[in-house]
Image 1 (cartoon, each protein chain N blue to C red):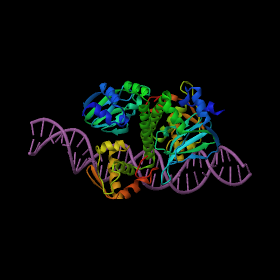
Image 2: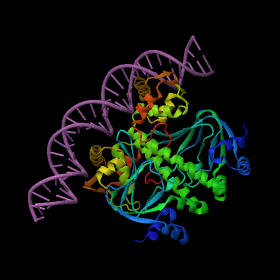
Image 3: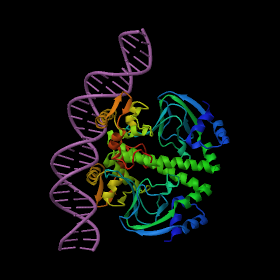
Image 4: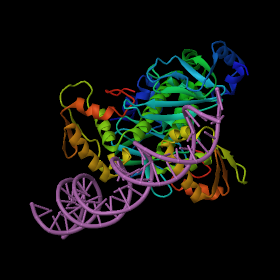
Length: 234
Length: 234
DNA sequence: CGAGAAGTTGAGCGGCATCAATTGTAGTGG
DNA sequence: CCACTACAATTGATGCCGCTCAACTTCTCG
């Protein structure tokens, strides 16, 4: 897959004209990284933003006493670092490859220039920022109102295909340790919470694949502690 | 204080030209509300955004089983609802007056129109969204890495004046119940956590005013569980 | 097949929530 | 102005949820 094709799949550039894609491609670099590679750390000078062509990336912060807070875990077609164009010039968190893959990097200065000259791109970025803010707020709500079993269930519900009424089978996108950190809990707690969820909602677990027999029962168990209604759309 | 003056104090409109302020003022309404008044609730059609001229406003979400998650508590010169211009047309949370005051309301459509015709305003909005996102991420980190006493201390530190090396005296901006909910804890927990903080950091508490004798000791107690360095700037 | 990591399970503990009772405080009306 | 009321704030007792430490099992991959 070539670079310009990858760029044009990103939702921020979906309706962009061909010229823009080409200008961006000209300044882009594609690299393949192994699991464990750190792209940048909290406090580094922010000069690039990234598009994931393939693989998984973890965004996180580390506290002085060694704890880690995972902000998000991203995959193919997703973008990160783009929201620092108008920041203080430093990355506010770190990024690490958690599943080997290829990453495209682009200069923030180039994106900034494009945005300043392209109204519809600026508005696209505003839209994507709005979406992210709302997800973030929902995340914060979940942390304070949902218990660990519900948080796992909520994650599963959002992975489930929306429009099938048959029992979906879900494959966890990455390993359970990573998922636990993504959901803000310990691996041991995750394991126990998942089996608690199984007891309460009749899901069937086989390694990393999970079958939901009764979607209704699951969503009731989860969404009673949420401000939204299933299926989640906000 | 007249409407256009109030509008021009908002950071989003700080460098705006006089014409813009006047166009906005022409479509603005100022209202005085008492404590308890609900401006809008989660799910309402989003048609207005608001500027606080005076008083305090709580933004929050409510879950089906009655729990409440406070998103933020805002005051004079702050703006809210502006980030729904590019949303799905519905308010994603509720807003309630918690300290009586006057609020200016403006149509979102007007702001949207201005932004689409005014590049520098669009960029201003992008900047403010960036700031908000980073604050939100820090908030999420705090919830998972800081305990209740540290969260209170962190709140105090951010209220303290930055550039004095003498012992600052801080007045809590609103009552302790509300502050507890803002920090995601129960009132009883807040009370206990505050006295724990007093024991560990030599602060002196007298009702709602708090004196910090040893700023260094306080910041060490707090910021060891944070990814940032004191004084907080990111 | 063996080493190391992921995942599970158990025991124990601490932090925060909950329920309940008491004290402090501000606002109301006689 | 004071008595009354309602609510804020504190304190105690108790229980649960999730973290920590530890042992064990399962899985993965060289």
